[in-house]
Image 1: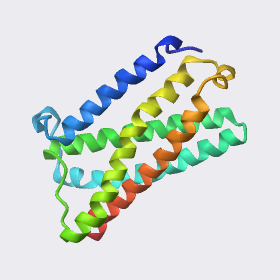
Image 2: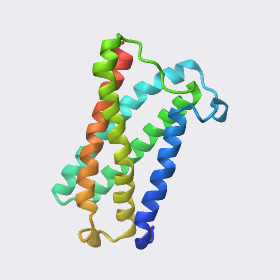
Image 3: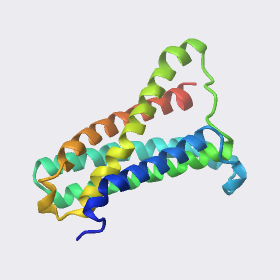
Image 4: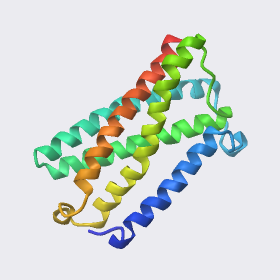
Length: 187
């Protein structure tokens, strides 16, 4: 069943990517006023990083299941796993953006300056860069899958781009968990 017009996949990918990244950068840059989101108790805001680490770990699991399923030819299990992964990612992003907006931006690093410069910042930079690169790739493979019957996907770049997206997604989620541990557990 076709949900997205075939000829619009690239255009929709571009539009969705630009809008998504604009919202993320606006929230990270403190451009969205905290009054635009409902207020939450402090304990909710403090719990969001842990919830996001759990969502990230779950997404690593579902991406892995989806990757293994397609290698075994189980298209339906692959579809379910990857849609679940996308849902986990959207949940992660919604909570992350809510917390950024509610608190007025990213929290400062509480540890030593050397750890900040030589460990935390490089990990965070790679994590953010991969997350940014993943967004258009994920939209593209998802829109390809929504716009074509399964049999026709073999004649598209869905598998090739999907492998790249899944690899970068796994690394980004893994680094996100490491960033969480450094920021919220170690310091």
